Image 1 (cartoon, rainbow, N blue to C red):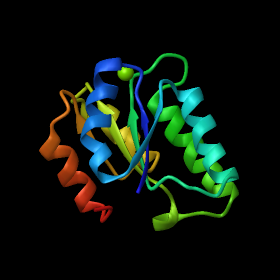
Image 2: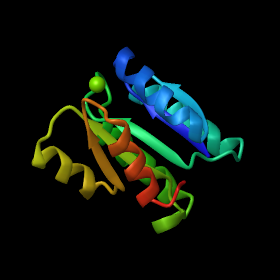
Image 3: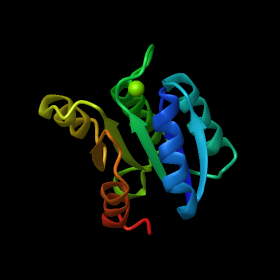
Amino acid sequence: MKILIVEDDFASRKILQSLLTPYGSCDIAIDGEEAMYAFTLAHKENTLYDLVCLDIMMPKMDGHQVLKEIRKFEAQKEIGGSDGVKVIMVTALNDPKNIMDAFKSQCEGYITKPIEKDELITKIKSLGLI
Ligand SMILES: [Mg+2]
């Protein structure tokens, strides 16, 4: 599968990449703007992502904004429901409001930092990606 990791923190990026590499090819974006660039480029090249791991707390454009932009972009292309990319939010905040906000913008799940291998892999399995 094709995976996009969106994370501004170097250490978290490295962990996610090493955990996900066995399951597919990973692209990395270090902020929201780069994430949208990668996401739209993938559509242009018709090599869509299967999974986006999206950090919530990032400077400039945060994970909530990126998620909204992704769903808006898909809606314009009439991609909806289960055809949309699967998005797992990654958050340091084990904070119900932040997570509920993410679900309102249509993510498929979330994991909390520190990132744990079992939690991440279980989540990906539950989405039917592996
Ligand atoms: Mg961050």
